[in-house]
Image (cartoon, rainbow, N blue to C red; front, side, top):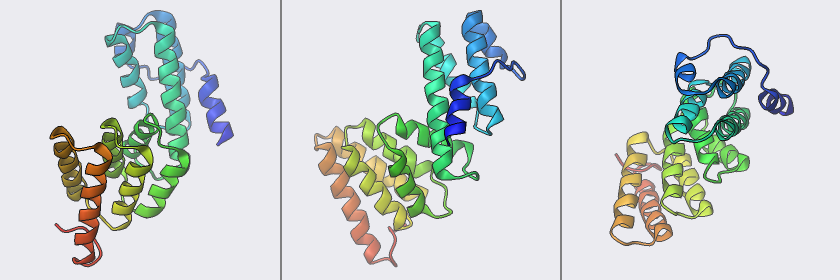
Length: 201
């Protein structure tokens, strides 16, 4: 793990397989620095598309070069930490989703709990829902606990999507975020107890 983070932090200047969009949108020093981070990520089998997207988002937002480089490097480090927890078979989407959740305060320990709850099932949707809950001001402990419980119960992607939509609607209608998430989550768990141990279709 330490070697992975060191490699990403040092980001050697290997310019192979550069994305032409970076040359078109970034000044030369920023382009070189971002390409170095991308190449370092590729060398340790991390997905590189999110890094390029992060740099392009920064450019579109008018961020200066040093700020773009820092944001891209931080994302690479988060993805490295996520892959370390989720394992070598984690998909690019799972790693990206995990890094996004970490940006909202989800810890490596939280990821490990979720990974253990999921077993071999993909975590892209549970992580996306967790991130959405946090973005709607559901407290971290509450959101993490609910998503872990639903994952352990075997909730499918469609069921997570329903949970997410219902919580969003409750909040939009004035419900307290923590109360909305807890009420909807407990409701799904109660129904699961009567449908073979998992949320209903």
